Length: 326
Image 1 (cartoon, rainbow, N blue to C red):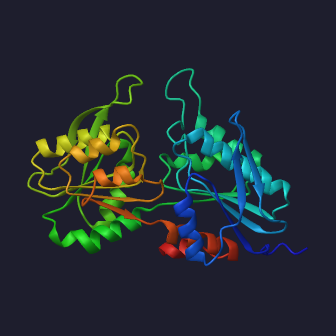
Image 2: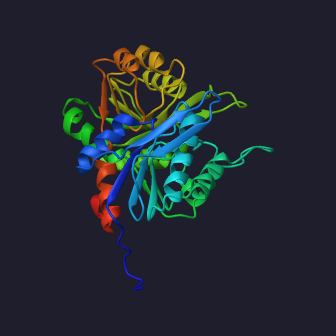
Image 3: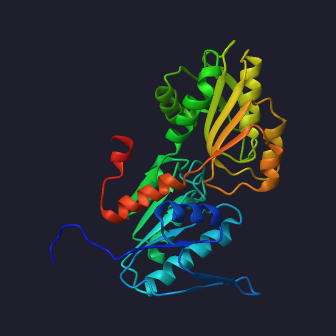
């Protein structure tokens, strides 16, 4: 056998129960049907997966986001991958727009786990040959996988939307990174939009999810502000960020982030803040109730064309970097 490019059978798309609409949109982008499968939860909470047809020798993509219910979605993804492996799929790619446990990426205190590494190991043991994910909280998560992966960012979608639809109305805009951990990625946003950047320095006390926002590094006075982050969970950090920039004389506040986790009262919290526009993506399903709360101020950009194109290129053995002129 020659050691050139391996050629697989056709693309087969399987969609988990965690991201049905996104899976359907990716299928439409690729002009491919969603493959049939049954996912049954028994009375004892055990999950069972049955494929609707053979995948022997095929190039299979499993689309599943691992947000709430996190453990059900993760387990379902693992079981689906193992089912495909046992049915002799030629290659299995886990397409996980939002990868759970991304924050548990290091031992930053004694006697704690590195759960992101465990999740990577589990995906490999289940039988994934490759993975694909979007804007992980920490870049080093890539190093937890031994299998190849496409770690993508949706930042260019947000940048394009801001440049084309909002930029003209902004006064001296400045990008604000919600904390120093996001400073590098925040700087990329600022560079891509040709704007200055400011940072919020935040100190956390203990294991409380409610962090302590403190100082602003940079100038936002009489300027419109675009606060950027990778995900918004309970919106605690964002509330503090909005308050800090407003106290420092900011004009209108815009918010851009990739993963709209919006746990607990996150959506209510966002709705109560003096934010002019919120730009996010559909990496995580946003309920109708949450969308209603943010009506008129929320733009949800679809990542389906991005993931669909990467799946197509992966299948054909073509460069993904070319999409971003890299």
